[in-house]
Image (cartoon, rainbow, N blue to C red; front, top):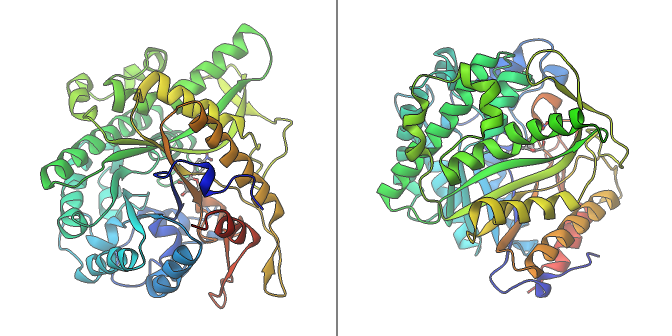
Length: 441
Ligand code: PNW
């Protein structure tokens, strides 16, 4: 049982579930091209068990069953992504008709079931030829992304409920080029600064293309992590503020205010591409909504060493199986901060929220009590924000299905529906049943 039900929220508040293409579809099927995640996973040491998205949840073939689960769970909206390499296998050349047909059928399948399609164009599987040509480090990526946007949206843009260009710019820019645990696995400040800016540029170009095509309800999906100083020293405070800067303020600052934060530019400025300032108007085009992905907080401690001269240290709160601290208040804090400081009245959506935990499937049941409690606590923080007048208009759980958790492989399970990877059988967990009950109309 969840504390709140649909009737505690305004009539126009939407509940949804989210997934992404590479994590569920089965990338070896349907004529998709090679991506940098296939390459990254094939290089020993990058991904646990060298697992990749070849089969994943076989959603490419099982999508009708998965959409039935969404409908039967009483959800209003489904957030999914389109694979660039499925639609344009080499990234820039010929279109794979089968790939485009798949998303067309998916959108119609959602509408037939009374579900709203919320599409994200890019959720991380960059076609390998583009990655080999410098990927997000190369400014030309923005033009190629604009064309991909046009190809997809010319086909499905008339029927989607909402659209966002890029999932979690921080992960695409910082995590993948500075921390190096996501493809392409670089650890290079110059690559990072360039990728962060080009992700923003590609976002702007994509929004421009979609406006031109008349696609409605355009937004962005940013991820946020609450930064807590490790102690009360000014040094720890400064470290946490910088972490907050490049994680939480950089992208939303660009999208909403047409500027990057000064404290982050102190470190990244010398590595930014030439004349980046000229792109800021394109990057900061008006949006119709802002999406927040929220999972956890980090404890930040100064470390010396090169920029950003800090590290994340172990915290004391209960953790998920990925070691992520559970801190529901952080979600309320970001909804308030984003509303007060950036979006000022724009509708907000929690576009992802969930936890990794494995509970055993036994007797046809998965009793994922920890996930039920996690979802309950976070929905309560959303309710708190709504009651304060913050225009939060929806909440999406991550994820509909257990799926490919990137460099962590298949061991961490985020789904409200259990997936048996040998039979591909789907089993709704207790968390799915709790949401189904709470969302009854
Ligand atoms: C999000 N981090 O990614 C993604 O949108 C999903 O694809 C993913 O499955 C989900 O969260 C759960 O991880 C993140 O380590 C992955 O800071 C890792 C981090 C943040 C976001």
